[in-house]
Length: 219
Ligand SMILES: N[C@@H](CCC(=O)N[C@@H](CS)C(=O)NCC(=O)O)C(=O)O
Image (cartoon, rainbow, N blue to C red; front, side, top):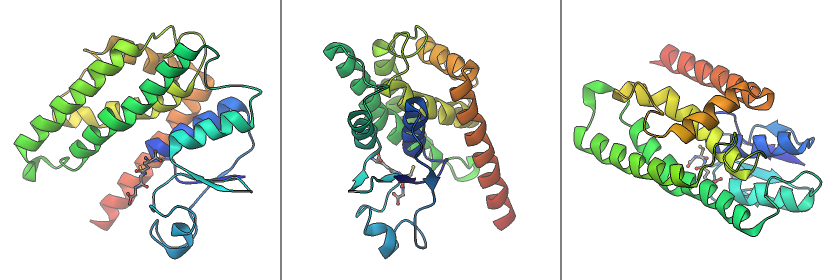
C-alpha cells in the first residue's frame, strides 16, 4: 500500500496519524504526474484531491473514508472506539472539522495579505470558524485526547486542524488562539508533548517553512 499526498494538507496528515498510530508500514509518496489534475492522478482520484490510498486491490479516496478503511482492514489497533456512542462522537468531531472548521479556515487563508483583505469576508469567515470551534468544544473531552484516554479518529482530524489554526489565526489578530476553546487547546498541548504528535507537528512546521521560503523566492 501507499498513500498519495503531502504533509501540508490537514486531510493527508489525518491519515498519516492514523497510519502511524496503527503502526502500519504505508509510505507517503507524492501524487504521480504533474499536479493533482494530471491524467495519472485523476485515474486514481477523479476529484484530483489528496490524499488517496493505493490499497493494492483498490484506490480509496477521502481522508475519513481512508481512515475507516484502514481501521477495518487492520483491526489490531483501532482508531475507532469500541462503544457505539463514542464511535459516533469521534466521527462527529472528524466530520465537524471537515464541514465547519477547515472550510472557514481556508476562506481566511485566502485573505492573508492585509493590503487587499476583504474585511466583510474575513468577519464572515471568522464568525463561521467560531461557530465551528464552539461546536467542537462541546464534543471534546480533552482527557487528555479528544475522546478520553485513547487516541482516536477524532485526534487524527483535530491535531492537523489545530496546527493550521495556531499558525494562521495570529495574522488576523487572534493571538491566544485557544482562549475561547480550552478543551481544544488542551488536546493541542497534549499532542505537542506526545512523541507521535510532536513528530508530526515538527514535520508540518518544516513543510510549511519550506513552502513559505519557496513562495517568497518566487515572488
Ligand atoms: N474531502 C477531502 C478533501 C481533500 C482536499 O481538499 N485536499 C486538498 C489539499 S488540503 C486538495 O487536494 N486540494 C487540491 C484541489 O482542490 O485542487 C478529503 O477529506 O480527503
